[in-house]
Length: 158
Length: 158
DNA sequence: CAAGAAATGATATATTATAACATATCACCC
DNA sequence: GGGTGATATGTTATAATATATCATTTCTTG
Ligand SMILES: [Zn+2]
Ligand SMILES: [Zn+2]
Ligand SMILES: [Zn+2]
Ligand SMILES: [Zn+2]
Image 1 (spheres, chains in turn brown, yellow, cyan, blue):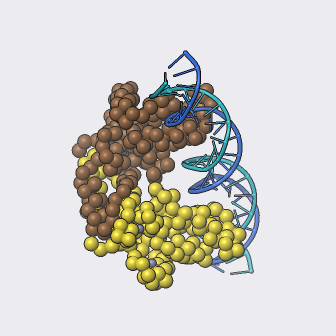
Image 2 (spheres, chains in turn red, purple, green, blue):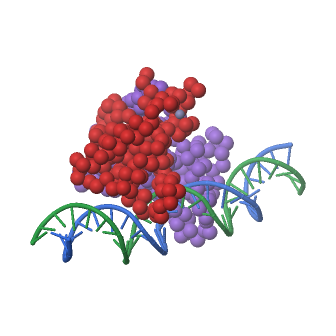
């Protein structure tokens, strides 16, 4: 068993730095501009391993004295999700930083209902089973949403 | 290949009647009241094989001259989803009539982005793969959301 | 029928998201 | 380096989805 969720007390600054470094690379590769606002939003999303709502981001930006409106946040989120740097968690209406933006968007999300953290995995067996189920019924997949709610390992044992 | 989606020109009245008959059975078994409002909402959901938003239901009810407010619709939806007679499609913020309410809520949903129809399946291989993936990471599942968007068989061939 | 429980009505408001147009900033060419 | 079109952000308003709260009605059961 390998817990996907980060250990308590891990060096989260490293998570953030690494995520930002990756994002810079992706943006450069895609010739997309990682502007101040996008960087700010991205970094706010990475303040925790939880999913964050658009309005939580808005509040955080406004708390810093910026006069930001909803469209600004949603635009940044659209930019980031289009690049696969951030994923939308449909069952939470919230956004989550991807730590493997190279993957081809077929991930699954574990959402802990106790601590609120989210972890992403790209489980080949799940992907294969989903693709096969689709094939069985003659369905041509464009996108998948696999969100699993429950208790993370920490929360089942503490 | 067995298409889950109903054939064009099928006798949809039979779908509706059968769904209502099933719902009555479930309600009786659960000692829950299938009131006029709940029946009305349920039957509106079953007018098509698409998912329906709460406000579409509200509009439909109001169009019939009833003076219905959002909470009424949401209450009926809560009742129906709690009993498993209706499922919420998270990625659409919409609601869908279940045609196998006996199953234990681990279904998957195929959502056609062209015709808008939804079909539910309970694919054991997918369920097993998801449960295994969860076990692999020490995660205790409470609920799963598996929503697959793409083109149904009809829409790929017509 | 009376009393309590369950359901619905009614009003207000919270939460999530987008449309539309104005302004600012950037990239690129001359 | 200034003009120009493209990209990004600012600004205002509003759409779409959902819930809190309290009043009233309807149902169940003794
Ligand atoms: Zn971390
Ligand atoms: Zn947890
Ligand atoms: Zn039908
Ligand atoms: Zn279709």
